[in-house]
Length: 142
Image 1 (spheres, rainbow, N blue to C red):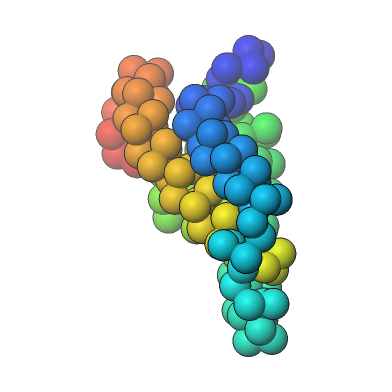
Image 2: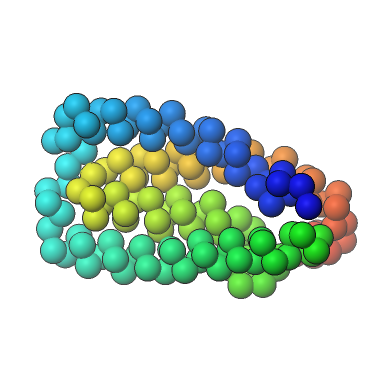
C-alpha cells in the first residue's frame, strides 16, 4: 500500500495551511495579545469542549476508516463519510483547530482552520477525480 493512497491530498492541504500556522505561531509568540480571546471565559471553554469532543471523534473515526478501507481499495461511504466526502479535512478545519485554539486562548486555531478548509477546497477536486476514475459508478452514486 502506497502512503500516497492513505494521505490523499492531505500533504498538499497541510502544505497550504502550514505557512498560516507558522506565521500565526510566530506572531502569537511575539504579541500574544493580538490572538487572545480573553482567558478564555468559562462559557467559551464549555462551547469549545462541546465542539472539540465530537470533532476529535470524527477525526479518529475518519482515520480509522482510512486505515482499514484504503489498503483494501474499498470506497469509504459509511460513518462520517456518509455525511460529507472529506470528513477528516472538514472536521479538523471546523471542529478541532478553532475550538482547540480557543481553549489555548487564541484565535490562531480559527485562522488555521480557515486555511486548512481553503486548501481542501483547492486540492480535493483532484482527489475526487482520482476516486471517480478508481471507483467509477460507485463514486458517482456516492
